[in-house]
Image (cartoon, rainbow, N blue to C red):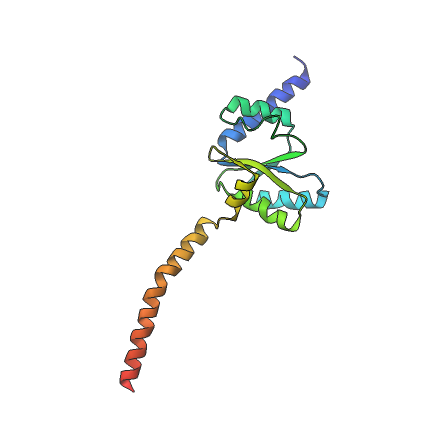
Length: 165
């Protein structure tokens, strides 16, 4: 085999490994972004521990076929200038970062993704990105649980002060 084919097989194996290891992957269309903007996005991904890389669509399709259960990486959905963000720890982090970045850079577009083995189209990925983080939800729950107790304590304190006076 030629050297080019060997290199492509290595890239397909790399993509397949990332697809298997990742908790989520998000495909974005980065066409129209300037180099500085792409660098800014890469830095945000790097800070969050997310792999962000541009691969040839045909190599991604082959890797998805090797992994299986990713039929949506096909000729219809995977066309154009695409990059893939692989999230390993927080499954929603890649979608959140891209969604937040798209608010200030409208040229980037979420196309699709897989989160914990489940396929999401662009619309559902955006909905998923809007969900508050686990920590935020826990803080809201604790705040809701604390409010009635705090109000009761303030009421008892006010009654005690009134009786003293």
